[in-house]
Image (tube, rainbow, N blue to C red; front, side, top):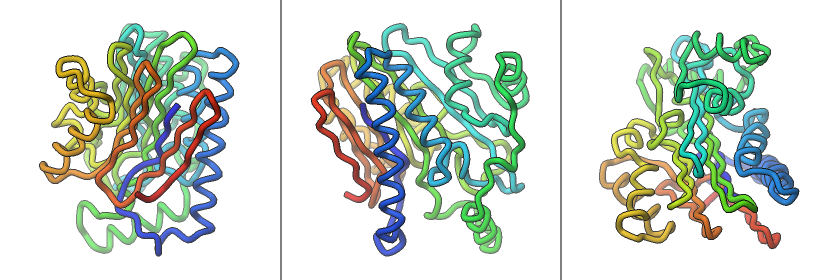
Amino acid sequence: MVIHGGAGVMDRKDITPEMQNEYIKVLNLALHVGDSVLANGGTCMDAVEKTIVIMEDSPLFNAGKGSVFTHDGLVELDASVMDGKTLMAGAIAGVRDIKNPIRVARTVMEKSEHVMLSGIGASQFAKEQGFEPVDNSYFYTEKRYQSLQELLKKERESTTNDKHGTVGCVALDTFGNIAAGTSTGGMNNKKYGRIGDSPIIGAGTYANNLTGAFSCTGHGEYYIRLGFSRDISALMEYKNFSIQDACREEISKLTQMGGTGGVIGIDREGNIAMEFNTSGMFRGYIKSGGEREVAIFK
């Protein structure tokens, strides 16, 4: 299993050793939870969902609690999942009252005829499926609020801050199946109901047993235009690239376009990739033999 907690412009000076320890603690907990599912014969989809819920519930990441604010001072969340065996997928976008978007994205996949639901409709579907809505204030953290205030002061649309924080997970189970999931609060100070790549199948999330499972983090507009995660799969399927080479090639395309971010991936043999073109990406992996690593910077 491989996880990420976002890629971005990070300076070692800005992330104190204490903060690094906090991030590493949650990443390790997420790996432990997902690994426990897999070790006990659970499915890759169960592992992906439960792992991402841990990160959504942590205020450290830009997903679930602790997500960044829109220009209007609200939190709007996106998430998606994909099953590599069946190519079934589910996504929600622009929701304001769903505590764990990844769980509802999976429910869209399993309990509806659709792939993506958005806004009020997604919330209505969640309620009908038994999910308790939460007030938008649940997602509030002072750090993210101050981030928005600084941006509003500068009166500009984007910044190098808060580009990191999206969370994702890819997993391979004992049945030889793979799955991917991604969850995010999107871009700080976003306007007009902006949606990034995270809930878009083939951009921020993709899984196919024939190739691999992928979850992305970064400047979503570029990932959408590249069809990022589907393109990695295509490089593996049609050009016989290894997962590492395919992910590197796609990051190279991203860099040439002027985009920033990262991607994690896993294939059916358990080969993994964690590629990014930023100064850091919160990331980690764990293998069935117990080998594990958690890292932040290059």
